Image 1 (cartoon, one colour):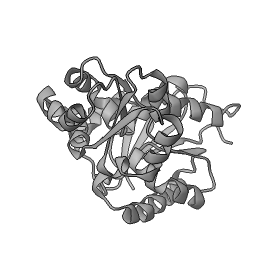
Image 2 (cartoon, rainbow, N blue to C red):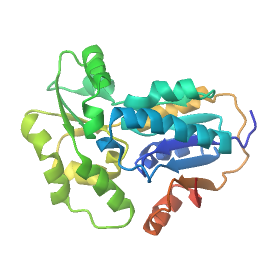
Image 3 (cartoon, helix red, strand yellow):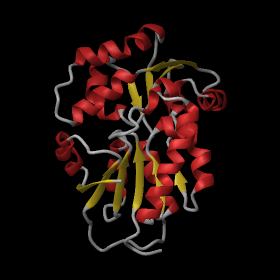
Image 4 (cartoon, rainbow, N blue to C red):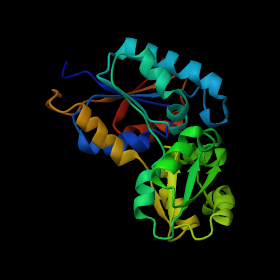
Length: 260
């Protein structure tokens, strides 16, 4: 494995930056390619059939172009729908992103857990399976919100995001999940709104998969060579990105921006 072979992160937009962040901390010298399918954004309102075709095809093109050592599907929606298809299409390790229901169940005292994701993610049988395996003794309430995805993207563009807008987006979950003490952020966009969510749901612990995914990447690449120094990361978009995102990308070390 060449030392400069990158880690490839993939999402519909910039939500996957919440996964990239912990990975940067764990593997600071890892070369990074972050790919955002902004031409297909948002994934949460698309059909399973469309994503099962679109996501593997895009990742095949990205792998051919960048020859990464590993691919990270930094998107819950894409992972719950297309992860198996992607693993069949690629000949490199693929790390998926799934709702952190297991760790949520491990820390919940009230045994009431909220799962906050996109509409596509929260309806997936995969979530049923995780609930049955790890939270069978819990009341698990799901809520899908496309509005929160857009608010997270807006925040990274530098637009003001009001606590009231976030509160309105999660109001159905708050109303349905009386006694909830843990909220699973089952969309990689949502940790980007951690402060606003804490204000909207005070006293509720937020759980997401970012740190666990970083540890998994570290495990799969253990013993591999890395560059001696950090390098400029690359952000790839499937159509021209909003220039207002550039400062946020730069904060995550993605200083080179290009189109697929």
